[in-house]
Length: 146
Image 1 (spheres, rainbow, N blue to C red):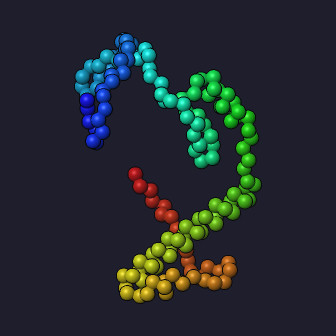
Image 2: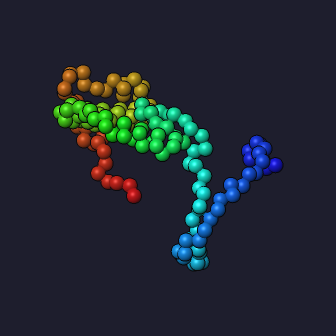
Image 3: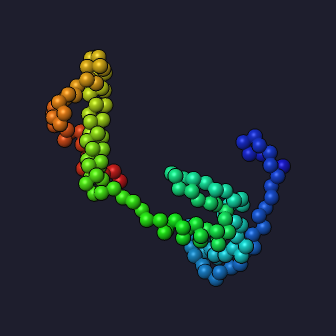
């Protein structure tokens, strides 16, 4: 019996049958012989129907079941919003992110100098469509991390 994180279990080796492929490589300066597995275990030893972001899929299914699911999924046409709606949403999200960055910076500055945070949170134009100041300073940086 073996124990892992307080749970006891019985070791059961997989018993994979391998054969040499004839390919030779080098790993950390040592020559190695590549092998192939003759009887690979299934990727999922069980069958389950799962949903990811609203899309249903099955794991552990036989190849014929998987092919029918893929065929059914590819025949459904995708619906996209018109380009003007998509661009409007993209710009609205961009401006919202800029305002969020500006707001968090103002709140941190107010905390640093000892002003009430409520004064910093109400610093916003109440006239629709009017920007009270330049938002360019709070936009994304043009530099990238590597």
